[in-house]
Image (tube, rainbow, N blue to C red; front, side, top):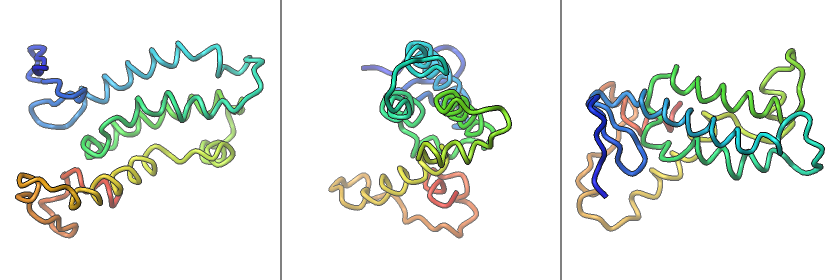
Length: 164
C-alpha cells in the first residue's frame, strides 16, 4: 500500500503520520481524533451512569488504550505537550470509569484502577521494543549505530523514551 500525502508535507505510513520535521504533532492529533470516535462508541458501556457491573477499566485497557499506544516507541520522542494531550484523554476516561469527583487526583484514580500512566506504559513498551531489536537477523538493522544515552545529539532519538 502506497503512502498517502495530504499536501501538508506529511505522509502516512503504516498508520503513523510522518511530517517534515518529525515532531509527530499531526500524528498525535490523528490519535486524538481516532480515540474520541472510539470513546463515543464505547460511551454507553463506560459512562458514569452505566448499570453494567463489570470491570470498565478492562474496556479501556483492551480497546481504547491500544489506539493511544500504536507505534508509540517510534513517535514517543514527540514534544511533552503532545504526550500531555494524550495523557489528558486517558485521565478523562479513567475519571469517568471510576466515577471520581473533580477533586480526586489522577494518580489515585490510576492506582485504584491499577492502570499505569501513559508515559509509564509507553516507556515499558519502548524498553521491550528496543530490547528485542538485537535478536532480529536483519542486515539493515545491524547498520544502526549503537545508542549512547549520554550523547546530547541523541536527545530526540526515539530510544530516549526509555529514559523518560
